Image (cartoon, rainbow, N blue to C red; front, side, top):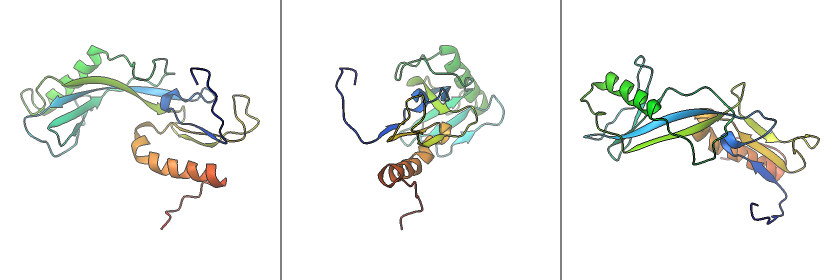
Length: 180
């Protein structure tokens, strides 16, 4: 650990999203987003075909999460929680959303939140999941596992990946298969 403390473990799982450093394969795709208050609770997610393809995800609290225009995939050097938010990227998203929905429409208010995050990805777009080879020169060894690179599908695939990797760690087999 950072303070020099050592924790004994039989297994370690590297699952740090775009900060997972395995064979220099992990990349991050930076997305900016804005949370915009709406005059009423919106009920439909919207994916605009045109206007730059922004995405709008209504929330039950009377806000809408607006995103789009991802940056190209890069090796992430920004620290977690310290991602730079570029005002021009936020302006582009809001401009496109407002153009598509009507300038004085439901998405016309100033945003409550402006933020940026990285989606973890790999050069071939496939997540890296499994046991690291014991002979791996980049830190592999008995009891070392990786699970990262799901991109925008992480929130959907995370539980299944967690179940598969937990099985692999506990029994040596990823199994899966529903359990019912």
